[in-house]
Every structure is written in C-alpha cells, then in structure tokens.
Image (cartoon, rainbow, N blue to C red; front, side, top):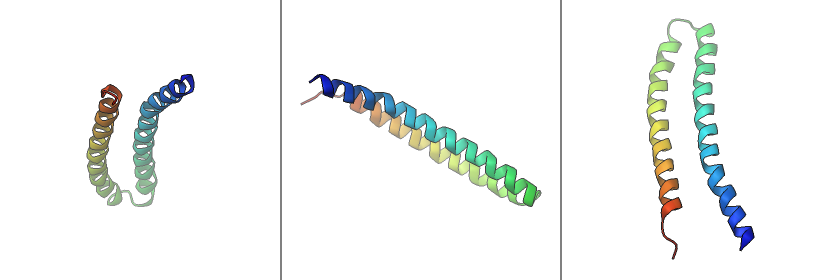
Length: 80
C-alpha cells in the first residue's frame, strides 16, 4: 500500500516536469533553427520559419492545455 503511494506521488510530480521540459525544448529548438537558417539565408528562410513557428506555437499551446486538462481530470477523478 505504501509503495503504491510513492509510485503515484512520483507519477504526479513527473507529469508537470515532462510538460515543462517538452515546451522548453520546443521553444529553444525554434530559436536555434532561426539562428542557423538566418546565417545561411538571411532574407528568405527566417521569414518562412517564423510563419511555421507561429503555427507550431499554436499547436504546442493546444497540446499543453489538452494534456494539462487530462492530467488534472485524472488527478481529481473519483476512484472506483
């Protein structure tokens, strides 16, 4: 019984941590790509990447909200 408590506790702590790491990685990756492509083709490529970056940011925000909602719903739901 006590072991299950610690396993559940670790699971609940790991969820926000993994969400944070995922969002951080996606934000950093966008800036790194812009930096590299800006050096290679300064006029054309960064504009296209910025447009795609906005699309990716919207999708990431949607996924973050969806996963957060699912995690919170799972944390407060009543056990059977």
